[in-house]
Length: 407
Image (cartoon, rainbow, N blue to C red; front, side):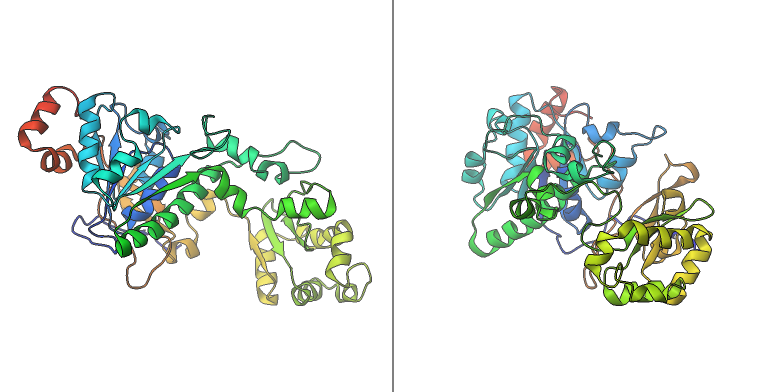
């Protein structure tokens, strides 16, 4: 088994976004994913946390802040009481020297805090303000709670996910938040490029709903044409066949997609069913989609008579597009994930064995591959480093003594 690549943090490392300061007021996932992209490429991302810390810190496994450690690497943390006028003034001072400010409060809260975009842009005309919320800054739902689960249901995703004879299935991970964070990072790059070219900052309105809705199939267009709702079909596709998940003899699972005519013919030959290539039931894709159950029974019978490893070796030799359905135990030792550095290990005293596995750099860039400058910060770890220069030593100490600066 290949050994996972072990990486050390290098505080002197510099990335393509070196010199870009990001003030991050967001909580939980979407905003933190947005700023992770910047932090991984050298931006100075300053997490402004409340006294209790970002809620993401509370998502612990075995007492370890695994979500915080993996999503908030390379960032700095300051801890402020934002219910105080002095805490708000400190954020305003940081924003005056920043390239971007990110927040994820419910619409209207930033304004109520005295950090409305109009005044922030008046003080720093180049500032990019990324506002993450469940439903956006306007519209009839702007004040509704905006958790990703609600968006995963509202977007149409859950309605088409799962099996027809069972309940709709919500994703077992933060899908809505992740799409919003990734879309948000791309939007922020566009806005920063515009600010660089024109000196003009702007506000980015990122809802959790629209990014997820945008990556689904053209559901509304299809509905207009057919007046039929897309059914829940499990792992099967309504556009192409064969495409499904199949169980192996030893209890494993494989996923198969033969979405071109050539691949289907290759598959049928590989399982000794060349005669089906000219069978009217399976001769072309529309016929196969119509007769998917019969075809799946034939393919499933072949796969189910063989162990996982035997299936993979057989179909790999035949050049058929099939692969294992991996679980986390398998991924933890998978040679592909390890060699590509999709999984790396970093030192962490809280982890069993002293090493924390986490994702590598995504995406992969040849000239500016991203950096590992520092582990995810302790609460308020960078108070002095960040706030003392911005506020002045005397004022910094006054706010610390008064409990406005915590940690």
